[in-house]
Length: 372
Ligand code: DGJ
Image (cartoon, rainbow, N blue to C red; front, side):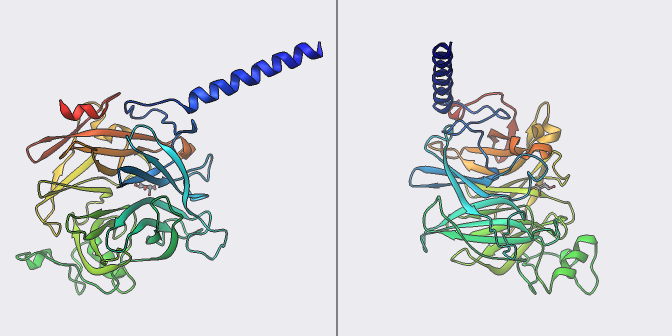
């Protein structure tokens, strides 16, 4: 009886491990938006609010590591990194920026650390990570930008500082901007101007964000500011580690979140969302011929059923499609606030009609779609 039991036990273990192996080795050849997406270890990818940087033919995906249960949306672990050569199959590279056990640290375990974006600085040869940071126990009050740096794409990243950008600085205005459109802190014209003026001495609030590197190597930090009422696009210093003080305000008072920027044929495009907490809302896009604007609001790029809620998602990044010049992938998060670790990824191809962009839902697609 005992021998029979051990035989069946061993058989069960062997079968289970074989199943694990099959799961772990599952190869993807397409994107299936909204479905579980397993890494090389067979675990659902844990990189929410993420962004991707390409370096020497490998793609590195950085995002918020979420945990199960009520604390899921707070930073209990840090920023997770994955690598891939084909964008379908991702290798777990571990935690690239870990939160600190020191409760006095700006990035203390349990803080809110969102939307990490990594860019490579060709001059300093450093990888620079910016993120939205909220201090431990202070809910969304701090509204700071945090920055960390590493020598290798996967890290480990060293936290440098966090702060509210552009203290004491007034916005930059393109030539010809009418005075009526300029913020006047003697007499703020609206709610958002009021928040801007309130925060002028200590620096502007910085929440949902992205970082964009232009063809000339200059980098820009784009973030929801002024209590999320207005977006700021701010120039970073040549080492990408601080703000120069030059910035513009975009779509004043209209509550744009989740910005993602890209450039095609000299035109700048930005996709974002409205501001409704973890619940989805319609995406919005903007166009400009200069990074300094004016940025024109262009409406909702999504079409078809679900377009009014971005198919349940919220933008996080736009990635140039590998080997497909002038083609781009829209990346969004489908948040699961009750069990954040189960959040899903919606990656969809962007279609161009002249200088207009369109996004359509696809149950399954691959990079060949750009050849059609
Ligand atoms: C929407 C933002 O886009 C997320 O990054 C996060 O800050 C949630 N709001 C919090 O409600």
